Image (cartoon, rainbow, N blue to C red; front, side, top):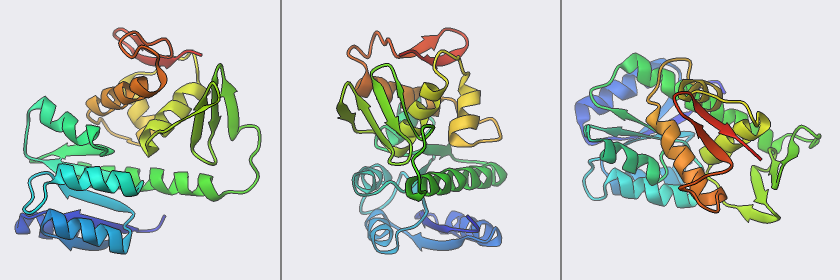
Length: 235
């Protein structure tokens, strides 16, 4: 993807203009909204490639905007938050954000995350529309059948409803079943980050996946934690 359309939903005018300037300089088409309700309507009408969404917004907070957008679309969502409590950051991921950035943040890191998220989204779009489902695009691991072209997973014949990043994480681990990956490796391989990110993002997505594919999420047999190392997938 060359450029892309990015929607910024932020009520801090100074930060909004800084983000707009830096994104425009990188070649992105930038749309803006100053409150949650306007941001939701702009996202619905313009269909951006990425949404950068503040948490504390007038009219409708970022969590609610994210929750609604995730029901309606698979657009990548990056949340901005001034809150430092771990539970506040996790909430953003639990309502459907792909990642979050805590203020104050490095503009260089934020731009790197934007590029990575757009690369991942574009790659998944190409996979979805590419012709010719070969054997490497649809594969089976144990009771799981994974169709990479259609972003579809079934377990024992039953379809499992996964978000965009949940699917990407499961597909990667299933293709490399039995192999252990650290959280940093998963951020690089699945999220596309070529820098040190917040590994809590990985932990939360693993937790969601366990709720959807494990008979007993508290005692998983598929998405296994290797203490002190990371995660692996077992069929």
